[in-house]
Amino acid sequence: MNYYYLASSLPPVTMDEAPRMSLSDFVELCDDHLVARDSLALRAVLEDGVASDHPTVSKWREKETQLRNTIAKARAHHKKLDPSPYVREHEDFDTAIELAVDEAFATGSPLGREKALDACRWSLIEEIEGYNAFSAAAVLSYALKLRLAIRWASFDEETGKQEVESMVNRQPGDEGIDTDTDEE
Image (cartoon, rainbow, N blue to C red; front, side):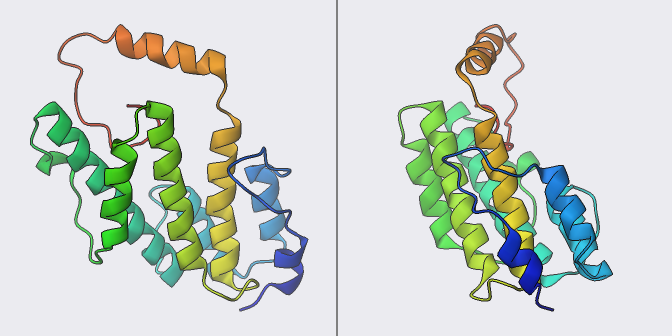
């Protein structure tokens, strides 16, 4: 199904500037326009644990799983740990993800690494989005991009300093592998 009015009314979104729409406003707007299956898919791409057989959701979850697995392997290698407890099954394999994670981990700063990893996510989202700017896949992709843009808009220097302080003060034995890219 195509969502001409909805898709054409959405403001542009980038990782480089604060979005003009909140995620809750976007979901509320979508509730007025999406059919039930696409509405459920929207919640599935935004919330863990929401089941969906929507092809866009499946593609996104496969890509995100491979990305998180690759991050876990890179962090395990760095910490000389076994990554297998942190790796999840996935069907597809994208060499571009492996290369992007390698490049991200080669950057000199944690912030640079996070930016590179989220740039990889952005590219994966655009790949999943396809060429029809009015499709359900495009609306779901917009939701994922909006979430990333909101994440980057929330970063500030004071919060960053607090995170660094928290990491510095961790106790020995707290060095598990975190596949969520919000922290190093």
